Length: 508
Image (cartoon, rainbow, N blue to C red):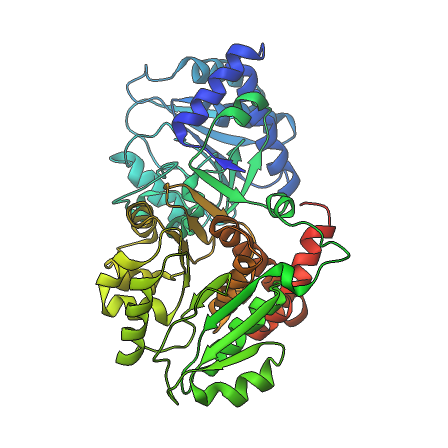
């Protein structure tokens, strides 16, 4: 699914009006019908309802919703903010005229001073103050109103986007001046800010309302941001031919493990095998021999000359994917080995975990990472590499800058793990579960990445596939073990099941 900017959404909206023989007011009514339907399905008409409407299109949505809810038996108290008395846009003014005639609605038009209404946890609040037209943070009396709504503990439904939050980036945002919605009903498309963890408490649960905007315009409008869904992954995966052999699916080598951290190597190896690589070789210090040969006998083993750490990285040309990092530590010999390998490397590699920490200790290595390689940092690893960031919003913007500069892929891990491409486009992952917040889950992902790269999928496809499949495996593991009980090994064991489910079950 494409994630459009506010300006792109406005263009699609206007194109629909110009092309589909539909008026702006008719589209507003479609939005209101969708919001009213969601509210009526979730709450009883006896629930106290307060509606806050701004002077622009978002306010028009709120006014139209109030009228439709009144027709269904709700008794909304509506507060329309028209400071100065002449600020309503044409659509908001038209919806106000219709609402005035509706029975069961208490309408207060605020044109100057405003006394805060009574609200408590028993209330349902519909937030229609400001939508994607908001160009700057809230200020003045609106910040007082927003803080009062938040502190009331009322249940809040925001139309399109919580008031005070921008559709895209929100540098310098003051969180207390943004509505904290329990449910956000986005119009036709989710917004980029929904996928940035800084704002998850503001957006709450979100759902998209399809109001029938022009499908041709949606299809032909390019977007820099996307959310990856099951149908996208299903198109990438193809059934294997009956006469295939392991030689058809490539050969992966994973440099992983050190004394006391061989578990990371085991998890990565299992991830590579379960994702379908034809052959998997684990390269580790000598101390890993018995562990790896016992835990994953399906993988081959190559030993470093060192007993405790990896001191040499020279895979040669026979491998179709090379992954480095899980559990390798940051010993000086390992750092030197990685530095020497990257200086000579001429094809994409996967760098994760301690490989990134080694690079952070010797940042000049960033310049040697081959074009189209994949790095997989979590927030802490990213900040060690590229400087401390104040929030995920800033971190994601920095990731775009870095990916474009170095021409590699960044898998920035989180709730909606982001695959940042070298051209600055971002693909947000939609699969996964909080159960995956468990030690070693990232090591499994590295293995899955190496498995897909070996087969060989391109670095772009491997990144998108691995992250999504990894998330589905986590979901399957949580179904069996519960949110608290999932281990990384459980995720690894479900990788094959996840691929099978994606390929055979209908798209969600």
